[in-house]
Image (cartoon, rainbow, N blue to C red; front, top):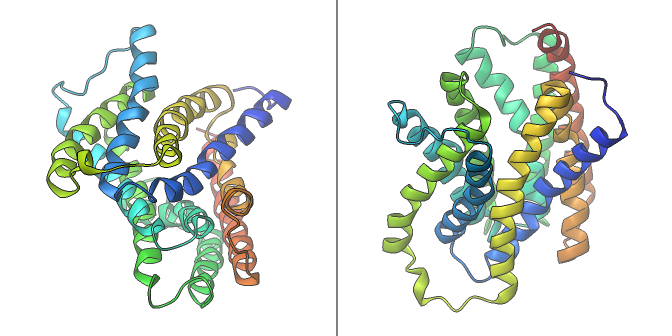
Length: 297
């Protein structure tokens, strides 16, 4: 791993912008498409650049190897369920709220990792960070201007979706000896296969008359926010390591709020700002506690 240079910080910022832009694009996609169809098209288009890279670099894709069941399970838990829950929830809440709720994943990961891993046990600093971060989430749910009886459950589903990302990440440890590109391509393939019959029987997308805006949003979600973003993440991880790449978590809620305002004129309340500040501070303490351990590996 090398010391970060200007280009590395630029790539990290680009990755944060790409992932943050997913939320307002999901919102636009919901104007014409159902949540299951959004999830399907996102995984399908997301698989294209990742599978393409594997073919070009001659990286074996093991989606149907002897470990197929791990790829299938992770595809369901890490892609199918969260992609659906987030798209379903964003139908009724602002995209900037989704960005903040999704930014809580490092906090959820800290709690779950304590129980399901051997070397990520919780400590006082982590507890402090988790409490601060989740207090911001609880505070956000008290914002009656943006979250009320009509969309409370939608916001909650987004939060649950973020937790499935964490569970999927923990399951990935089971196949951590395999190349990242192979794992990502394989789980995207399985997620697509799962979603095809579900979409056909539940939403019948051939009956839709989608707008160009929504269709472009879905293509962007798949190719850029899913496929290319994962490839950029691989590049950053290989060059600068996990600790550096993890800093993207600080930027996602900030960019999510800014992009939601620019593209959708979404309301930014004082409680939104307080909540995102609490989440960022919480993530800081959690990652500060992890940094020495990760660096020494």
